[in-house]
Length: 117
Image 1 (cartoon, one colour):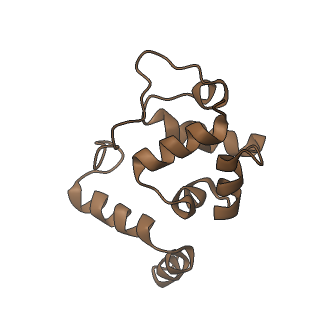
Image 2 (tube, one colour):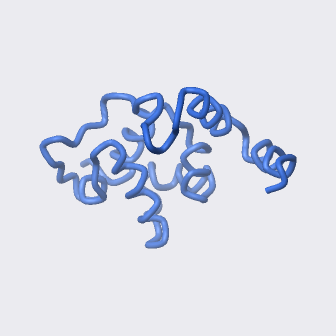
């Protein structure tokens, strides 16, 4: 039977994200993502808002991830667009964001420290 972790992994794979990348987006460890996907743990309440935000970009809902109930337009097969107008203003910003997300967490921290953040 399909559970949250299987549906969450399908979503992550469709985006082409590693467990580390999605963990960074949700402020959890790679191990936490691995446990969710294996069905060994469930997200905490404080993680659900971040998960909802990520999956909403693809028209998915928490209800789909948790219970498998999908709306007619819910799908996880297509990769997300390169950038979304209004979130990223142009292709250069999209490229910068993609490169930033591709960095290891320690590299991200170093880059942010270099930028004075």
